[in-house]
Length: 320
Image (cartoon, rainbow, N blue to C red; front, side, top):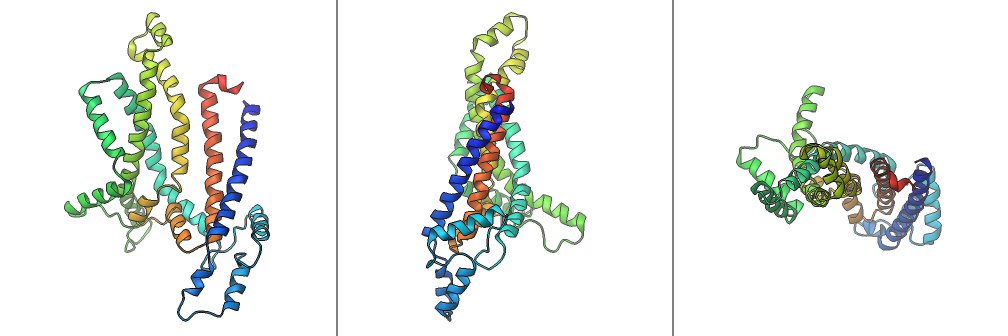
């Protein structure tokens, strides 16, 4: 197990380095932070603009390879540079990760558990009315953009007299720890439901498909021939086998949602990683985009290792 995970970790580290480096080069070559200054009125002197960009390692007159080297040395020391406002990218990234974690944690755990359970349940009741209704609803949700789902939930809430507050992380008028915590929990409801609907539907469809393949497998018939009831045979032997192909999808979707929940964060005014990515691109912020690239590549590393760990625990054949 240890050697297997070590081999995989080395492969992922190489991929993370390449992905982060390519993100930096892409951002440095495509984004033009000088535009942020030239679009101001009155326009600042060009010499002072270059001095500011030079201090942020974003001066276009410096060769991109030289800028990359300065950036790489800084990243290895935990310094991701300054953003377009002159603030620390590392501090901003830490704050954004906390916001995204709070938003995504409940939604991803609940969607993974309920999605797998619903998929297995529908497979056991294939072509029954509940399975057909679930299939129609699932395809309807999957075909609906996140933007529409979020706005629909907001509209229903407004029609009902706005019983749930949903804009921002909490009510700024709330005073005291308990009031802020309650307000924060209330503001989590609608974005959590939005994320849950999308993830739950996706996971349940995959789980249903893999479960149907397992239900006709020989080992399950053998288990039943030994005296196990269908329910016990499925839970003890079938479900574990059916979860294995879905596990990488679960892990990658959950972790990569940190930078993929852009619409949800924007619509509900949660200033997390997804919103930061869009804002950074709009402001030609090379250092912030590169930092998000490093963070996303790191998520792929973690997701890959977690997926391999779970996969190896469920299926010993992959350890060879």
